Length: 115
Image 1 (cartoon, helix red, strand yellow):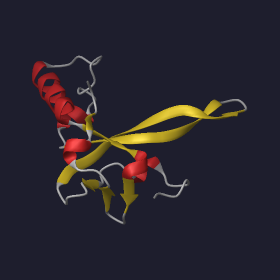
Image 2 (tube, one colour; image 1 turned 120 degrees about the vertical axis):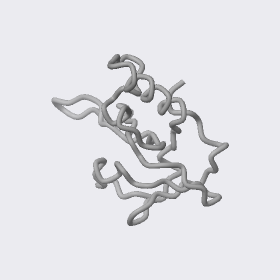
Image 3 (cartoon, one colour; image 1 turned 30 degrees about the vertical axis):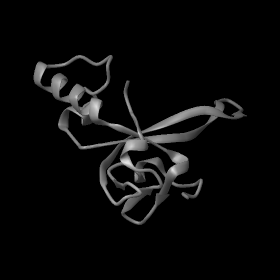
Image 4 (cartoon, one colour; image 1 turned 180 degrees about the vertical axis):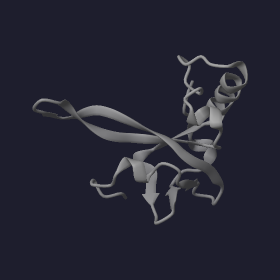
């Protein structure tokens, strides 16, 4: 498991390996949930719910994989395609190594990141 003081930015770009050894892709985004104790002047504390994993694309890096973002046809199209293939890896299934993240699940057990 990952220490609580781990910086989210250090997760981005890391390769994720499934329990069966299959490479799932790289971490492109982190999903946070605001359900922690209330912090004065901030609100509910954030915790990592999981990460979005997939093959990289320029369109995804520019945010065109998001449903509410519209851009030039090629980037928008490739971004949406990358989003359909992206997977959501729950935080509690992750074991963080020095360079890679290993999940206790196989690809078939993971949900798509964007439905």
